[in-house]
Image (cartoon, rainbow, N blue to C red; front, side, top):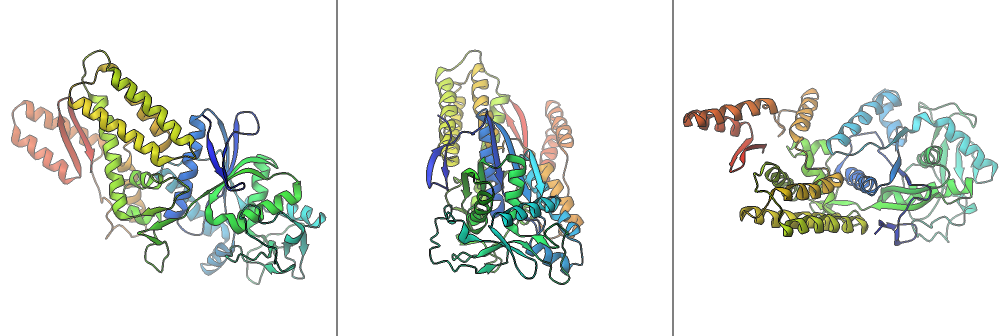
Length: 489
């Protein structure tokens, strides 16, 4: 079956296919780089990554565009406070975002675009909207979108704007009110603010215009899918639709995917509640990137995820179980032949994982399916029922799983070492739970080999001493019937 995806525009689960050839043209709202990304942001980015990976696994080509919002109200305010240019202020957080993406194994989109590199395109877009009567200039030189001239306003968020006050304006980038206002397309500079020169006058773009301009520049006036967090549906995405379709007269995006908020320990995440965490806050507490990614994928994107530290510990345990199972299968010394029941189990697992993902990206069902396979295959292994040809079938199922979930590669140590260097550079290492230092993989392999040699020489005191040394460094050594394996705690 093809992918069936919930479309916010129609409020229905619909079959998703690209409109042209075999390429999915997708735009997702990237970060506003005024601070480090928090786990609510990354729930959305991980969900979009899951979609991207599944589309690629399904045989589609991707042209994904993601924006970097490097100018908005907060950035202007913060840069002025720190007496930096906008570019100087945002560079640090943009670089940090890409490092965080790598931490969570997020694939980089084909096209990443910055708002500040498309200012003139935005000014030209606004000029054309004014020509068509959808935009107007105010006395201070700002431009606003005339909502009353776009009768379909509200079709995404399903809000009723029948009582809208015509001509009322709002110039802040983000607002929560349900009653619509003509929104800012271009903001004339206030005293001391950064601004750009343009054919429509000095100023800077409003938040909403950047996504319309950059998505259509790289994907065309109408494209397949637009994704983002549920908080963006109104006003941001609603405004994108209005200004884009007003200019082109075409459907802006056919599908809209919105990812639910998460709670933290059962409450809305906020600094006042003391439950506001960036990804880096979690790393400082010693939590592994693989566990964070796993937890963020464990609940389907349209359901609310309650992010808890107990859940994070359970996620680390689940990732460990999967990695241990893969290592066990890869190392197993088995008799020739195959077990038909195991072959059927692997085949069924691959089919059910795919079916789960085709069902509006039901990640919870896909995870349940792979753990059913792990449990049954481990039982068969304990009974001596696995055969040599079963290894490839089971590994193929795990590979299919990991193409989407991306948690089986044990690279947490290298990532935590990188986090340690960042924490040391910013004076955050003391008091954190990050490893201050630790043995490299090569050093561990050398010690494991030395321990094996000591055991063969019946020097059990030396072998035990090496095992204790590794344990103190957070390395678990396991002696199995198929050989020795080690892992980091």
